[in-house]
Image (tube, rainbow, N blue to C red; front, side, top):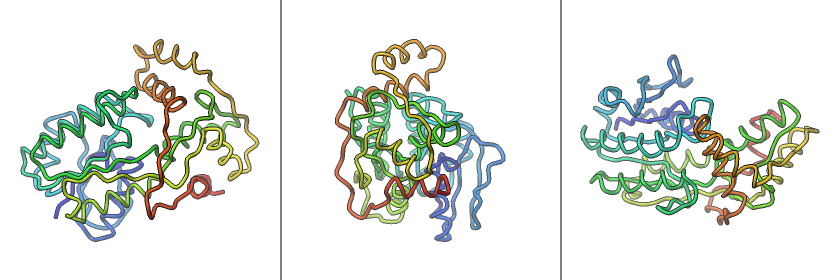
Length: 287
């Protein structure tokens, strides 16, 4: 088994790589970050390039028996956007996997995907799922709820580092959050367990928290006395339109936040998933 992890230098991907390398499995990482190192011992090869580039895929995919897609364009300092990465990037990766004879494809998706979802990210993930289902490859789709780590970056880091943060909207709508380590465990299982072939696996966390509760958990866990402000929903809608031509990634995040502030974002916990936000806060901020 040779496993290609696309997006293997990201928050989820690096955790997946560590888990697979710990099992002494040969892993190839596709990353856009020059000079990136996996930081683990084992048979880990690094290919630097962009998943949207055909030449990159022709270097990264051949020889792989399993492809794991952990790519995402929603968040992060170098996020390229959900249409570019979550939809088009995944479609190109699926096509390359088929071209080069890959046996299995594991796709990281999100709970709530739908063709008519009001959240652009959810629509993009749905389109990626459809491309994979139609490819003829053996597949597993791992759908996760909102990553704790993504929202710690957006809400928690400013609170801890700068003493204040902004919550999108009212902050009163419950949302299911899941820890990346639990999602990585599900991806690892999907790679190793062939009974998950052509199955959709959902991974949700043990807590449904409002963003206000999310921020208060950070304050409680770190001892921060920082201030929590709110961006009113009408202002968010206006910003998402104004920023779209100049900062499309940020505009997409704000549009998603509008929905997260209004729609039912709760989910029952996945059996065996027990990592709580306070646990992740303690590790992230060494509280």
